[in-house]
Image (cartoon, rainbow, N blue to C red; front, side):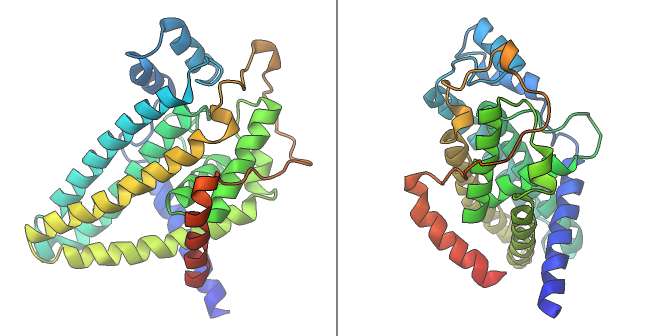
Length: 291
């Protein structure tokens, strides 16, 4: 009973943190503005227009080009989050209560930023429908799974692959609400949320210790952020790039767009790509041993 309560509390803590981070200024990425800016130097105006109106895959933009753009976005977000984390470590132990909570929030906020950027590059739909509005349950679910991929959990990899498969097969422009909120993927969302809730709590404690000494804490804190954020973002990039949604052969025409709910019957889970399976197998063992 106690263990079940701890899992529930970890899940609740994560969702509370995710919702709070999503409301921070500058966290939500405008899909149209980002795609236009990110693709401006590499694609024609017609490709950019089609990427915005439909998807980069529908515009025929090759994945290797998107990988270069994604790499630039990852480097930018990594530099930014590491600098902010280092700045939070400057005051030392006197300001710990304020700086630690702020650092965790801005870290999750930057995870949200890079998740959105990578999602839009690799042909996922707009995740936030209205500026300032709370994220709906489907968006919360898919962002949780993206975070799970970043943390290296095999269950999240498989679930993201399933959602991508549903969307590409049904040529849908919206997230599959049912699958993410009450279907077969929903239990995975809850499990991943609980795992990340525990993981973030442990990581934030490590950063608390690193901030105890002024200036020295800044270097350690910034270094820890760099060492964790960069590989996590690269892990998500690699996984999204390997999914069918990112493949230019999955092209959407106006007559093929399905605006309604995605049907989820008889759809198999898209497995993690071969080069990730070994790492993911190890990661899920860690995940299960800690949950």
